[in-house]
Image 1: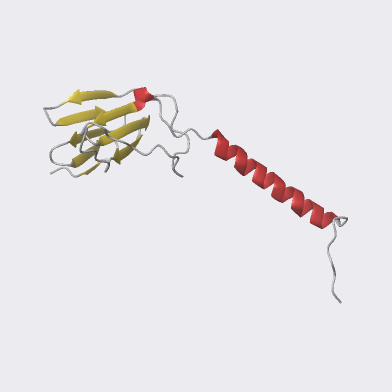
Image 2: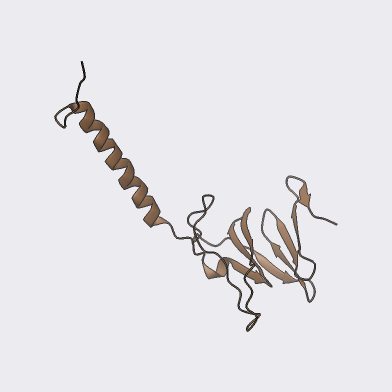
Amino acid sequence: MRTHLSLSQPAYLMRAMRNVLILAALGCCAFAQNPVPDPSAVVLHGKLRVTVLSDSLVRIEASNYTNAANPNDIKFDDRATLAMVNRDTPVPAYSVKKINATAISISLPAMEIVHNAVYPSIVAKCDSSGWSTNTD
């Protein structure tokens, strides 16, 4: 014997209401995101953009966009990512120092990042945990 569900059955109504609430919550989250960072948290160096998100978190992005008519016209992707949906957060303390004509250093409380525009490389150092990468 087959049983048909109808809207008058409580279990069906509860599932339908739960699904509507889940969709509404997901919709609210989608509209609450702001992937464009505060301009004072952004460091541009050549085709590299570093967004300082916290004392120990940065977002590093290299632009592949080229405009032959205007080489200084560089574009970056400001869409939200799963890791950081809202990048418009309070700007942590950091400093930028020019090392030479092609390299800069970005110092944060928990790390230092060095970027060389001519020889594309990024050096990240963190004294507290002892890790570093690309230190050649």
